[in-house]
Length: 323
Image (tube, rainbow, N blue to C red; front, side, top):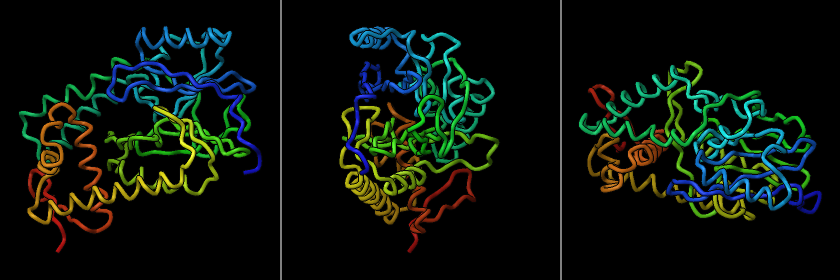
């Protein structure tokens, strides 16, 4: 590393969320432009906590000059609605339909999941659980990006920080990387004690095929191994200082999980929903999106490896282990 790690320019704030993941971390960068990275969740508790923490260091919310989003999930964007409309909001283009609650996009969102879950073998009686999928969006924002960034871009007022695209947990995910000391502001790209769930999403930009978030996420983790990273400021929990060893551990554990799914399919072919019910016998009814994302992610991974094949000739897809 060229220089000793400098964390004085980055201030961490932790605010509550109503989600099982718990508190979320926000970061203030004292660059040429005072920049907030991520914007918490849209609750009065979060906003009051953030204001109190800012006040403790002699700042007000009106001092913040721009916001950068690591990704579009509600616990990272919701408080945007409490900031002035004129405040610049910067992020990957894929944030926009989510944070602006674009009606056309959400029509496609509902149609996409109805089709995907039907093909996954979900009993129509369970399709009403789709209503729960969008319920967390009440804690999200109703804003639009004012400018967009993609791989390799630098952000106005933050000349030392470079954007790295890190899709998987969300298609919109980016991290900020400071090369001189290896500091990363990482959102949910990787967390210290839990593995972020690569979540299914509808295609964007009129793509015909859905993305495979688990496969994407593995590619993201391997991509981060190519960078000299000394510390990751994470979206939840504490910092990560031994990133490379944690990445190798996470990749191994995910592969072990996938091969346990392969053993299930060696016993009998199953739909994705049947696999999900076997993996999560009680949780799937409460957390349909999380559990189906995890299940389909493992199936995608095994299909990518050539370990399984998918019979798409029936009204729903059936996964078979290759002999």
